[in-house]
Amino acid sequence: LYLAETEEGANRSQIESPVMAGTNQLLVPAETPRASHSFFVVYTQSTLVEQTTPSYLAFLDEVSRAGNVSFIDDDLDKYELGGDLVWTRPGDDTEVTHYRIYLAEDRTGSGRSLLGN
Image (spheres, rainbow, N blue to C red):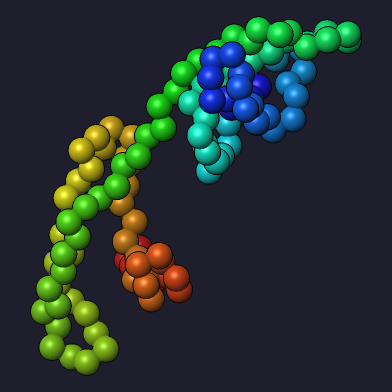
């Protein structure tokens, strides 16, 4: 099983190791880099040669990001925070099950610490 840029298998990149005959599924691990790939391609292989024309499936890469984050600190003590953190839900949140809120040192999440339970 490979990721590929086209249905013909151009610029393919193998996912995990080869799947043994008799198996018809493979878990694609979370955080698998998509790069420029838009297709899964599956080739059969014999002891002599790999199939030249793969079966394929086009996929869409889901992105769900909260936006317009705002916070007003109502806690009057130095080095302490308190108040409502507000954000806009993603346009398509069908795959979102939770939101995790972190305090971080910068916008890339360096030194982050989970807020709450």
